[in-house]
Length: 143
Image (cartoon, rainbow, N blue to C red; front, side, top):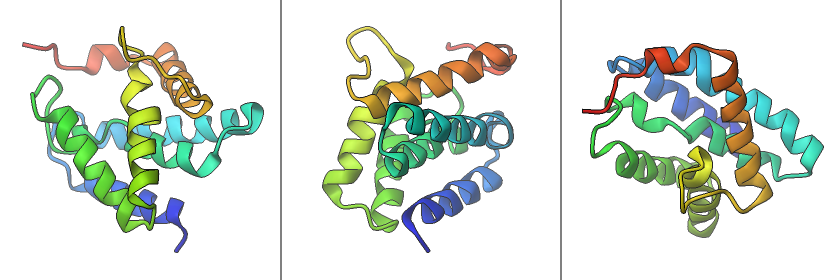
């Protein structure tokens, strides 16, 4: 099994077993859509297809275990994401790069903007999804 397929399979399993409010919806609606759109953008902008695709699959992984706004959401998502990447035979360095330069800045928060073409591709694909759906009406407000 190649690395992309390994990541896809492990992430799909987590989403399908999720009992969070957003878990199943995220897999069926957002995650796969963003991953597919990111593949198209990687070709156009000559980004690393494998890294962007895997990052797209992992970018909201916290939804499989935690509700939005939970303090553990981001840290668990990054730890589990790295674990999955290493299981898929990415090196520790590659896994850290995917998390730090592609996934972490994908939300474009002040002081944490994407600086690599791969990070920009994921942020753009994710942003395109949000423009075309009612996602924000489904998110539980932060407390």
